[in-house]
Length: 131
Image 1: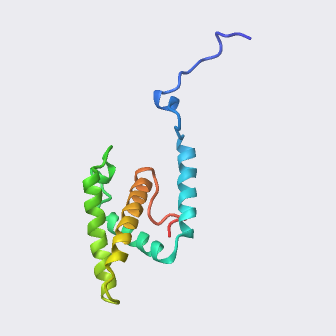
Image 2: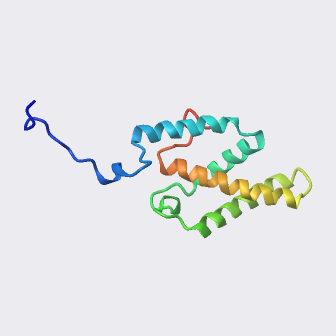
Image 3: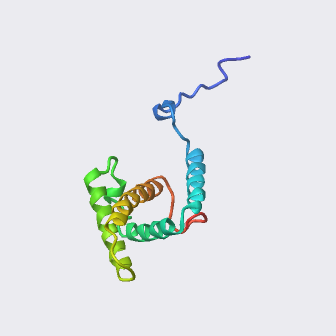
């Protein structure tokens, strides 16, 4: 075999990292995540849709959700404001339960981080797997 005829292309540095996902693998992982989110309980699905609607307002070039390392305090503040909106919408219909809203705040922050991850990695709202 003639070694001069074979071209050896070095891999880009980021492809040598352990855990690197190629764009095709990342797309498949994102679709898997979106599919599994269909198994969420009813209230969580509702919150997820509402969070996605609120996050649409922050989905623009230069937004903090696309920062390389988003600030933890900014994410917490954003999650708290979302909880307040959800709380106002729901307390009109039923009585107040402070313990429930403490648990809901944690869930909203997790859903917010998941939604930010999806948007940063090519997931788009209104896709085939979106709830």
